[in-house]
Amino acid sequence: MSDLAGKHVLVTGGAGFIGSAIASRLLERGAEVTVADLKPSEDPRVESVVGDLREAANVTAAVQPGMHAVLHLAALTSVLKSVDAPTDFHTTNVDATAALLERARSVGVPSFVAASTNAVVGDVGRERITEDLPLRPLTPYGATKAAAEMLMSAYSACYDMACCPLRLSNVYGPGMGLKDSMVPRLMRAALTDTTVQIYGDGQQVRDFVHVSDVTDAFLLAMSAGWSGPTIIGAGESFSVLELLEFARRVTGSELPAHHVAAKPGEMPAVLVDPARAQSLGWKAEVSIRDGLETAWTFFRDLHAADATGAGG
Ligand SMILES: NC(=O)c1ccc[n+]([C@@H]2O[C@H](COP(=O)([O-])OP(=O)(O)OC[C@H]3O[C@@H](n4cnc5c(N)ncnc54)[C@H](O)[C@@H]3O)[C@@H](O)[C@H]2O)c1
Figure 1 (cartoon, rainbow, N blue to C red):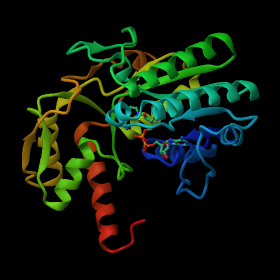
Figure 2 (figure 1 turned 180 degrees about the vertical axis):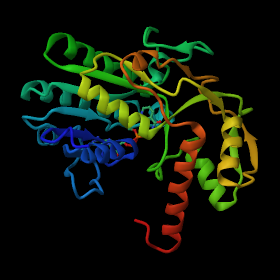
Figure 3 (figure 1 turned 90 degrees about the vertical axis):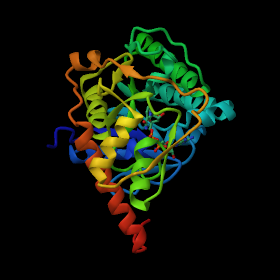
């Protein structure tokens, strides 16, 4: 499919896990892609703007006149680290977003789609999270994403721009070799025959959405001009213990587990309602079983490449 031929799209954070999947998909569909990130993209087909988006010159170089859209994924992403370094999170996740929005407005980019999170609403127990809940973030990470959403709301309202924060649940899939969330920890433990740590009783539930479904959401939001916060999740949550069982089946490993103290501030449940995105034509297509297979293949290949010294 080359329906995006002639369209120039910026992907900030496009050298990271989700951003690199989005950049690849854009290229497959014929778009011209610029990636702006602290590190260079590994894909030789993109133009790379390497540098810190907190610096004005990098924002100017990244957001170019005539661009079709900015897909903004660059961010500091660790909820726990945000508690220790709130200022860094503010400058990266809020100030850089403000600068990108302003540059996009000034050169006339019509669509701005950014990665947000359900952490903007804080802990709502087992209530299903919708876009209608009030913003009550409980960490600096959640607060910076909520602040970025507020800026996007104002830019949508005041200027001729469609700004859409996509509130992603737990994203997993191929390409997450540098991540430290539950799925990569399970995959690494299966490869190295080590024990998995389960925080608390393991009954905490999470919504897992595959990176390929998230990529679909970014491209659809961009093409259809979505505006306003939109939840992107599977709509079905599993406990950590259930995820462990799925991983045992997919990897064929025993994956012995031991329980350690729960992490402070960890939410007992995250259940999301993706009805808005579904009404706009998006749907999670990848089942947890098939999705874990793709992650397992990726981690096995990475492990084999590392073992032969072919890894990067
Ligand atoms: N992974 C998830 O489950 C998840 C869930 C909800 C939201 N998100 C959001 O999705 C986005 C992408 O997450 P990811 O999992 O791919 O993370 P990632 O860490 O793999 O990618 C983030 C990228 O941003 C870049 N970056 C960070 N600070 C920068 C700066 N100052 N200037 C330029 N580049 C900078 C990093 O180098 C990295 O390549 C983030 O905004 C994150 O908050 C992720």
